[in-house]
Image (cartoon, rainbow, N blue to C red; front, side):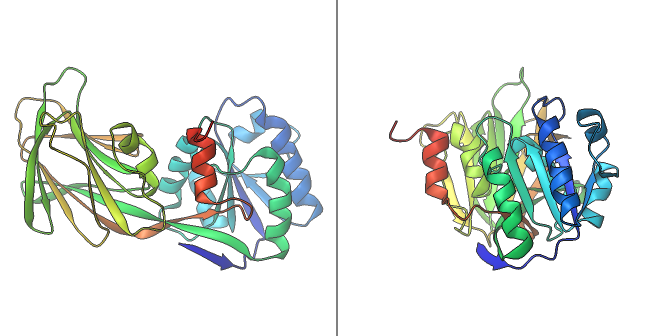
Length: 293
Protein backbone atom coordinates (compact mmCIF):
# COMPACT_ATOMS: atom_id res chain seq x y z
CA UNK A 1 0.00 0.00 0.00
CA UNK A 2 1.43 3.37 -1.05
CA UNK A 3 1.16 6.36 1.25
CA UNK A 4 2.69 9.79 1.60
CA UNK A 5 4.53 10.26 4.89
CA UNK A 6 6.58 13.10 6.32
CA UNK A 7 9.81 11.72 7.77
CA UNK A 8 11.57 13.34 10.72
CA UNK A 9 15.16 12.35 9.99
CA UNK A 10 17.88 12.93 12.59
CA UNK A 11 19.78 9.64 12.27
CA UNK A 12 20.18 7.50 9.17
CA UNK A 13 21.32 3.88 9.39
CA UNK A 14 23.56 2.24 6.79
CA UNK A 15 23.59 -1.48 6.08
CA UNK A 16 25.94 -2.82 3.41
CA UNK A 17 26.40 -6.11 1.61
CA UNK A 18 29.99 -7.25 2.30
CA UNK A 19 32.69 -7.31 -0.38
CA UNK A 20 31.17 -4.72 -2.69
CA UNK A 21 34.27 -2.82 -3.82
CA UNK A 22 32.26 -0.10 -5.56
CA UNK A 23 30.43 0.73 -2.31
CA UNK A 24 33.38 2.50 -0.64
CA UNK A 25 33.13 5.81 -2.56
CA UNK A 26 29.34 5.79 -2.19
CA UNK A 27 29.62 5.35 1.58
CA UNK A 28 32.09 8.23 1.84
CA UNK A 29 29.81 10.41 -0.25
CA UNK A 30 26.84 9.53 1.95
CA UNK A 31 28.91 10.49 4.98
CA UNK A 32 29.71 13.93 3.52
CA UNK A 33 26.10 14.42 2.37
CA UNK A 34 24.61 13.86 5.83
CA UNK A 35 27.38 15.71 7.71
CA UNK A 36 26.72 18.82 5.61
CA UNK A 37 23.02 18.63 6.50
CA UNK A 38 23.42 17.99 10.22
CA UNK A 39 22.16 14.41 10.04
CA UNK A 40 24.01 11.63 11.90
CA UNK A 41 25.00 8.58 9.88
CA UNK A 42 24.99 5.36 11.92
CA UNK A 43 26.67 2.41 10.23
CA UNK A 44 27.54 -1.19 10.94
CA UNK A 45 31.23 -2.00 11.66
CA UNK A 46 32.02 -3.36 8.18
CA UNK A 47 31.71 0.19 6.84
CA UNK A 48 34.98 1.13 8.57
CA UNK A 49 36.82 -1.40 6.40
CA UNK A 50 35.04 -0.50 3.16
CA UNK A 51 35.30 3.28 3.56
CA UNK A 52 38.04 4.35 6.01
CA UNK A 53 37.24 8.02 5.37
CA UNK A 54 33.62 7.64 6.42
CA UNK A 55 32.61 9.82 9.39
CA UNK A 56 29.88 7.65 10.83
CA UNK A 57 28.87 6.47 14.26
CA UNK A 58 29.59 2.73 14.31
CA UNK A 59 27.07 0.41 15.97
CA UNK A 60 26.48 -3.35 15.69
CA UNK A 61 24.08 -4.17 12.87
CA UNK A 62 21.45 -5.48 15.28
CA UNK A 63 21.38 -2.10 17.09
CA UNK A 64 20.57 -0.01 14.02
CA UNK A 65 16.74 -0.30 14.02
CA UNK A 66 16.49 1.03 17.57
CA UNK A 67 18.38 4.26 16.89
CA UNK A 68 17.64 5.39 13.30
CA UNK A 69 14.78 7.12 11.49
CA UNK A 70 15.67 5.81 8.02
CA UNK A 71 17.71 2.79 6.90
CA UNK A 72 19.74 2.80 3.68
CA UNK A 73 20.68 -0.62 2.30
CA UNK A 74 23.50 -0.97 -0.24
CA UNK A 75 23.28 -4.42 -1.81
CA UNK A 76 20.76 -6.69 -3.47
CA UNK A 77 17.43 -8.22 -2.57
CA UNK A 78 19.13 -10.69 -0.21
CA UNK A 79 20.45 -7.80 1.87
CA UNK A 80 16.97 -6.27 1.89
CA UNK A 81 15.47 -9.53 3.14
CA UNK A 82 18.05 -9.54 5.94
CA UNK A 83 17.04 -5.94 6.71
CA UNK A 84 13.39 -6.97 6.96
CA UNK A 85 14.26 -9.58 9.60
CA UNK A 86 16.52 -7.10 11.39
CA UNK A 87 13.87 -4.40 11.62
CA UNK A 88 11.33 -6.84 13.04
CA UNK A 89 8.20 -4.87 12.25
CA UNK A 90 9.37 -1.40 13.29
CA UNK A 91 7.94 1.27 10.98
CA UNK A 92 11.38 2.38 9.80
CA UNK A 93 11.44 3.27 6.09
CA UNK A 94 14.10 1.44 4.09
CA UNK A 95 15.76 2.81 0.97
CA UNK A 96 17.40 0.10 -1.13
CA UNK A 97 20.25 0.87 -3.52
CA UNK A 98 20.89 -1.84 -6.07
CA UNK A 99 24.37 -3.34 -6.00
CA UNK A 100 23.06 -6.84 -6.68
CA UNK A 101 21.45 -8.64 -9.61
CA UNK A 102 17.74 -8.24 -10.35
CA UNK A 103 16.97 -5.88 -7.50
CA UNK A 104 13.16 -6.01 -7.16
CA UNK A 105 13.42 -4.53 -3.66
CA UNK A 106 16.55 -2.40 -4.13
CA UNK A 107 14.81 -0.10 -6.56
CA UNK A 108 17.16 2.89 -6.57
CA UNK A 109 20.15 3.29 -8.85
CA UNK A 110 23.24 5.21 -7.71
CA UNK A 111 22.21 8.15 -9.87
CA UNK A 112 18.85 8.39 -8.09
CA UNK A 113 20.03 8.09 -4.47
CA UNK A 114 21.17 11.60 -3.62
CA UNK A 115 18.33 13.52 -5.31
CA UNK A 116 15.95 11.18 -3.47
CA UNK A 117 17.64 11.76 -0.11
CA UNK A 118 17.47 15.51 -0.68
CA UNK A 119 13.72 15.22 -1.24
CA UNK A 120 13.24 13.02 1.84
CA UNK A 121 14.77 15.72 4.06
CA UNK A 122 12.38 18.40 2.81
CA UNK A 123 9.30 16.75 1.32
CA UNK A 124 6.89 13.89 2.01
CA UNK A 125 8.22 10.41 1.26
CA UNK A 126 6.35 7.86 -0.85
CA UNK A 127 6.24 4.74 1.33
CA UNK A 128 5.21 1.30 0.11
CA UNK A 129 4.15 -0.87 3.07
CA UNK A 130 4.68 -4.52 2.10
CA UNK A 131 2.77 -7.42 3.62
CA UNK A 132 4.77 -9.94 5.69
CA UNK A 133 3.91 -13.46 6.87
CA UNK A 134 4.41 -15.23 10.20
CA UNK A 135 5.39 -18.90 10.06
CA UNK A 136 5.02 -20.93 13.26
CA UNK A 137 6.15 -24.54 13.69
CA UNK A 138 4.27 -26.86 16.06
CA UNK A 139 5.66 -30.23 17.17
CA UNK A 140 3.35 -32.47 19.18
CA UNK A 141 1.16 -29.44 19.84
CA UNK A 142 4.01 -27.27 21.14
CA UNK A 143 5.41 -24.20 19.39
CA UNK A 144 9.08 -24.90 18.61
CA UNK A 145 9.91 -22.08 16.18
CA UNK A 146 8.46 -18.80 14.95
CA UNK A 147 9.60 -16.54 12.11
CA UNK A 148 8.47 -13.57 10.05
CA UNK A 149 9.18 -13.39 6.32
CA UNK A 150 8.92 -10.79 3.59
CA UNK A 151 9.13 -13.14 0.59
CA UNK A 152 8.20 -16.70 1.46
CA UNK A 153 8.11 -19.69 3.76
CA UNK A 154 9.04 -22.90 1.93
CA UNK A 155 8.66 -26.52 3.01
CA UNK A 156 11.11 -28.44 0.85
CA UNK A 157 13.10 -31.65 0.71
CA UNK A 158 16.87 -31.90 0.94
CA UNK A 159 18.94 -32.50 -2.18
CA UNK A 160 18.91 -36.29 -1.76
CA UNK A 161 15.39 -36.78 -0.44
CA UNK A 162 12.59 -38.32 -2.47
CA UNK A 163 9.25 -36.63 -3.19
CA UNK A 164 7.63 -35.54 0.06
CA UNK A 165 3.97 -35.37 1.09
CA UNK A 166 2.64 -32.11 2.52
CA UNK A 167 -0.95 -31.96 3.70
CA UNK A 168 -2.41 -28.49 3.13
CA UNK A 169 -5.37 -26.95 4.96
CA UNK A 170 -6.76 -23.42 4.47
CA UNK A 171 -8.98 -21.96 7.19
CA UNK A 172 -9.67 -25.43 8.53
CA UNK A 173 -10.67 -26.89 5.15
CA UNK A 174 -8.55 -29.61 3.54
CA UNK A 175 -7.11 -28.54 0.19
CA UNK A 176 -5.06 -31.62 -0.75
CA UNK A 177 -1.94 -33.58 0.09
CA UNK A 178 0.76 -32.32 -2.24
CA UNK A 179 3.28 -34.89 -3.46
CA UNK A 180 6.10 -32.67 -4.64
CA UNK A 181 9.63 -31.45 -4.02
CA UNK A 182 8.13 -28.82 -1.76
CA UNK A 183 5.57 -26.07 -1.28
CA UNK A 184 6.04 -22.29 -1.32
CA UNK A 185 3.80 -19.94 0.64
CA UNK A 186 4.60 -16.41 -0.48
CA UNK A 187 3.56 -12.81 -0.17
CA UNK A 188 2.85 -10.66 -3.25
CA UNK A 189 6.41 -9.34 -2.81
CA UNK A 190 7.69 -12.91 -2.91
CA UNK A 191 5.62 -13.76 -5.98
CA UNK A 192 8.50 -12.54 -8.17
CA UNK A 193 11.06 -14.65 -6.28
CA UNK A 194 11.16 -18.46 -5.80
CA UNK A 195 7.43 -18.78 -6.46
CA UNK A 196 7.81 -17.26 -9.92
CA UNK A 197 10.60 -19.70 -10.85
CA UNK A 198 8.32 -22.56 -9.74
CA UNK A 199 5.55 -21.41 -12.08
CA UNK A 200 3.59 -19.19 -9.73
CA UNK A 201 1.76 -15.99 -10.77
CA UNK A 202 3.04 -12.45 -10.45
CA UNK A 203 0.88 -10.66 -7.87
CA UNK A 204 0.91 -6.88 -7.53
CA UNK A 205 2.17 -5.81 -4.07
CA UNK A 206 -1.05 -3.88 -3.41
CA UNK A 207 -3.16 -7.06 -3.69
CA UNK A 208 -4.12 -8.51 -0.30
CA UNK A 209 -3.22 -12.10 -1.08
CA UNK A 210 -1.12 -15.15 -0.23
CA UNK A 211 0.24 -17.41 -2.97
CA UNK A 212 0.68 -21.19 -2.57
CA UNK A 213 2.93 -22.73 -5.21
CA UNK A 214 3.94 -26.42 -5.39
CA UNK A 215 7.52 -27.20 -6.43
CA UNK A 216 7.69 -29.87 -9.14
CA UNK A 217 4.39 -31.53 -8.13
CA UNK A 218 3.91 -35.21 -8.95
CA UNK A 219 0.41 -34.41 -10.23
CA UNK A 220 0.36 -31.95 -13.13
CA UNK A 221 -3.11 -30.85 -12.03
CA UNK A 222 -1.64 -29.34 -8.84
CA UNK A 223 -1.58 -25.66 -9.72
CA UNK A 224 -0.66 -22.52 -7.76
CA UNK A 225 -3.38 -21.03 -5.55
CA UNK A 226 -4.01 -17.37 -4.75
CA UNK A 227 -5.97 -16.90 -1.52
CA UNK A 228 -7.01 -14.07 0.77
CA UNK A 229 -4.35 -12.65 3.08
CA UNK A 230 -6.89 -13.13 5.88
CA UNK A 231 -6.62 -16.92 5.47
CA UNK A 232 -4.55 -19.24 7.63
CA UNK A 233 -2.50 -21.93 5.90
CA UNK A 234 -1.64 -25.12 7.78
CA UNK A 235 0.93 -27.51 6.36
CA UNK A 236 1.64 -30.93 7.86
CA UNK A 237 4.64 -33.07 6.92
CA UNK A 238 3.34 -36.58 6.23
CA UNK A 239 6.48 -38.30 4.90
CA UNK A 240 8.69 -40.12 7.43
CA UNK A 241 12.41 -40.80 7.04
CA UNK A 242 13.05 -37.88 4.70
CA UNK A 243 15.02 -34.70 5.30
CA UNK A 244 12.54 -31.82 5.16
CA UNK A 245 13.32 -28.18 5.90
CA UNK A 246 11.33 -25.03 6.47
CA UNK A 247 13.24 -22.29 4.66
CA UNK A 248 12.50 -18.65 5.47
CA UNK A 249 13.18 -16.04 2.78
CA UNK A 250 15.82 -18.38 1.38
CA UNK A 251 18.19 -17.42 4.21
CA UNK A 252 17.15 -19.24 7.40
CA UNK A 253 16.38 -22.93 7.73
CA UNK A 254 14.62 -25.07 10.35
CA UNK A 255 14.67 -28.89 10.19
CA UNK A 256 11.17 -30.41 10.22
CA UNK A 257 10.09 -33.83 11.41
CA UNK A 258 7.21 -36.03 10.32
CA UNK A 259 3.85 -34.74 11.66
CA UNK A 260 5.25 -31.26 12.31
CA UNK A 261 2.72 -28.54 11.52
CA UNK A 262 3.62 -25.19 9.96
CA UNK A 263 1.04 -22.44 10.37
CA UNK A 264 1.43 -19.49 8.00
CA UNK A 265 -0.66 -16.35 8.36
CA UNK A 266 -0.49 -12.63 7.70
CA UNK A 267 1.85 -10.85 10.09
CA UNK A 268 1.02 -7.73 12.05
CA UNK A 269 4.42 -6.48 10.84
CA UNK A 270 5.00 -4.69 7.56
CA UNK A 271 8.15 -3.75 5.66
CA UNK A 272 8.15 -0.08 4.67
CA UNK A 273 10.01 0.66 1.44
CA UNK A 274 10.89 4.13 0.22
CA UNK A 275 9.44 4.07 -3.30
CA UNK A 276 10.74 6.08 -6.28
CA UNK A 277 8.37 8.83 -7.34
CA UNK A 278 9.31 8.46 -11.02
CA UNK A 279 8.74 4.70 -11.37
CA UNK A 280 5.84 2.29 -11.00
CA UNK A 281 5.65 -1.44 -10.38
CA UNK A 282 5.09 -2.31 -14.03
CA UNK A 283 8.16 -0.36 -15.09
CA UNK A 284 10.15 -2.39 -12.57
CA UNK A 285 8.76 -5.62 -14.07
CA UNK A 286 9.63 -4.48 -17.59
CA UNK A 287 13.17 -3.64 -16.53
CA UNK A 288 13.84 -6.75 -14.46
CA UNK A 289 12.09 -9.31 -16.67
CA UNK A 290 13.15 -7.71 -19.97
CA UNK A 291 9.59 -7.51 -21.22
CA UNK A 292 9.36 -6.06 -24.72
CA UNK A 293 13.09 -6.45 -25.36
